[in-house]
Length: 122
Image 1 (spheres, rainbow, N blue to C red):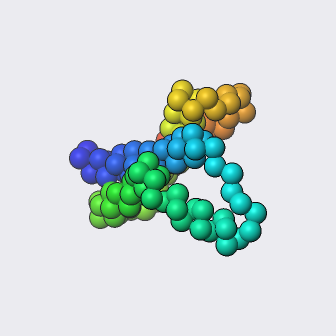
Image 2: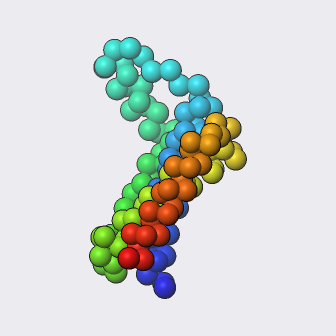
């Protein structure tokens, strides 16, 4: 059972990274410049924002957890759990980021959860 903590850590840090990036970029009201070079410079500067940096750092931590998971599980067992990330992002996005709630998204998430259960159990 402790091995599942690697998967949970991967999920938590992956979701945190996505949520914090969306939250911070929305709060900064980022509008990207048109030219490729200006866009690249602007995005590079954003990396040093503490919140954005924490999002990238969480991706690194998620990768470390994933490496741990790969030592304990077959990838065909561990990877289906990663499909739960969109469900978590959906719920957190609605609760904290005022994202839109639609029945289509709910139905899709239910199908993802059912698919995850079937894939892992059978």
